[in-house]
Image 1 (cartoon, rainbow, N blue to C red):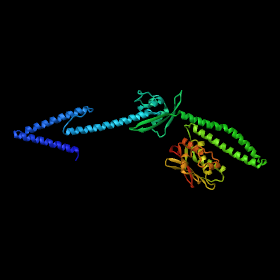
Image 2 (cartoon, rainbow, N blue to C red; image 1 turned 90 degrees about the horizontal axis):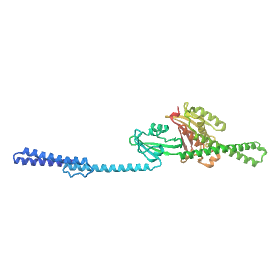
Image 3 (cartoon, rainbow, N blue to C red; image 1 turned 120 degrees about the horizontal axis):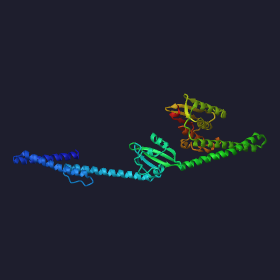
Image 4 (cartoon, rainbow, N blue to C red; image 1 turned 45 degrees about the vertical axis):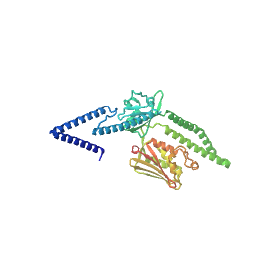
Length: 429
């Protein structure tokens, strides 16, 4: 039995005893009903007085509760206990919120909280300078009315925040801002804004340096390769030691030319703005052209092609061809000469897969996270012997990203490798 039930039972027993005593006293004087009525009226008056004291305290709960007796005292004690617990919880929550706001306010990145309708609830000082906001005048204002950037407003309204937005703002002093948005609470949104201008400038300097150095080196390297070719064309009149040395020089010059070519191509696809209109590419035509080219370079190698249906993707033919070309070259180089290289295109759900498979020695999975890094090599001596530049998979990664695709790597030591370009539904129509 609960405490409340015991209290109510005790109160009922007390009332019954009081009424019983009043009735006996009234019977003694010959007026039992009058005595019972008077006792009940006195009890009601007492309860009303107690209720008045409870009501007065509820109107000013910050004061200590009054001393109330009986069932009303128990009720008041429970209310006071719940009030204290609620107040303590509220204070803890308020302290947590204040601590969070103090932490966010001290951040160098801009932080903005907006409600479900897009109105600003709070923002820190960094957001004021990055987005030219004013505190507290802009609180309650719609964020898209204050930020004059079509790119930002489109990103904010569309609601797809899986990828951050990076955009250029300002005319006199251009600034590159990176925006990340996440949902919280009742459809509220939390925005993080960072100035990435320095990183963008450093990346651009790096790209310009690689592109310029690569471009400047091409001319002297072409001259060197040309003279080496001319001399080796008349190698019969040269001493044998000179011939071997010149052949090695020509081989290394060709390798350096391939490296410069890949560097220039990688710089181009990294820094190029994507056109709004892309052509629909026939994968069958692309693969057949690739197989014909590989047949001329590696006539002894078998390339098996299997395409389901008439697959098409949206993109740039030259870039996509370079990606598939690099994957095929790698499959040929890193697999035995008597094994075929397979190119298989198939639809799986809403995605189109273009897989290039080989039966080589395979790659340990520990290398997967770094395979697409520039110049990363699983085995330096082996890659050097095969003449690779270390840029092929980096090119593939950037081409895939530009086409809304992803690169999937599957490999098992001793069993071979499969590199698959997976295109989303919009590219596979």
